[in-house]
Image (cartoon, rainbow, N blue to C red):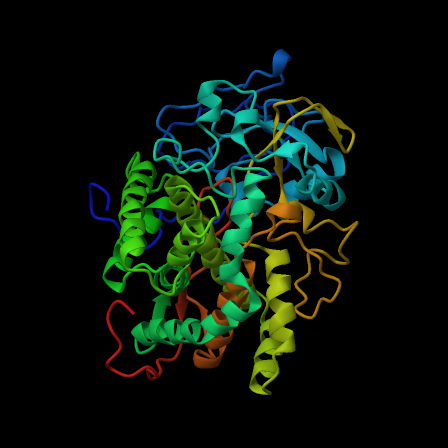
Length: 504
């Protein structure tokens, strides 16, 4: 728990009027203000403006990072320090709302693009599908931050806030083979097709009980009331977190995905508290093991597989952190896409009414491609000089693969900006590629299919409440998800009965 009361889900920002993305800067205008920490931009984009800073030699950032700012959140005027040729503004609030026109420009004009991130860290953005797929599988790009050539300050701006101080660095997103191979082999046992299939009834039960809580009201915030708690409770069940502790996890997780929307330092404090809890839970599971993932990791370690306590805690932490936010965004973004494409939604509803599952299965893959939960793959660092596209990457340079840009590449996907739930040739990169492919993807797909199908069946006239221009996207470098998704529908009956426990 943080030092002040924490909401169950992402904080709702102040509403702002409809605005057009500022993706086409033109010369001869300088911006009139500089970004300030912990404040959302209140300005409207204007025509004829030039990026706030111009390229400088020796790859120095054009602006210094502000103190106490969470890494990854969009900055009002965060512009690349190096542009050749001049391109669209990146990392503004307008960009966060619809990054796809900017990504289209980058694919065409600067497909491997050196930029300064809002945190002040310089990195390469890889935007074309072929380059992205190659980079994701290139063993010269390490996941271990020790290979980052930046300053100590810059290194502290990568990764998950607070994970270093909490000694949670030894997880799958930060290590390479052979340690990665060993740890992935251990945790992948929890996500086999058989284990995921066995978990399906519990996911359906959680889904129905969450809908039961708001179905009689006729209105809901689908992020706060549904998409956020569903994967939290599911992953807590999988890990073996007792029911009486799950609301604490929900609070910590809510703080962790706010990306600067909560109190300053709140993310790091939540990570620290979660780390302390996981250490205690591991000790309890050693004495009283159960049929859960943490107990399985302990049993495996006790039977010869080397797994330190820090590794066990880091593994549980990253499964929670990475395993729930991706699913929150899959459900939220997926529902939003269906509400904005009524013809595709009608196709899916008709298919479900006929008892068919095929369109639901291909539809989930298309929603992952079209506006997926992960915008950029997590950090990679060049261990030696290498070439991506036509660009020479120096040893130690950070590289970020832009999954959202690659999955809209017209060189790979026909009509990439069209949502087609029946799309067949769909080898998207929504969950990555190569040895770091998302280990929890089978569970995320199960939760996404169950959530969307149940919403459409039980709330057949589900519709947006208010204007789409009022919706805001959470600030963050890696993930892409809505802060809120207010909806309306005809009130209906609960199906779970009145004896459903308040904590699920």
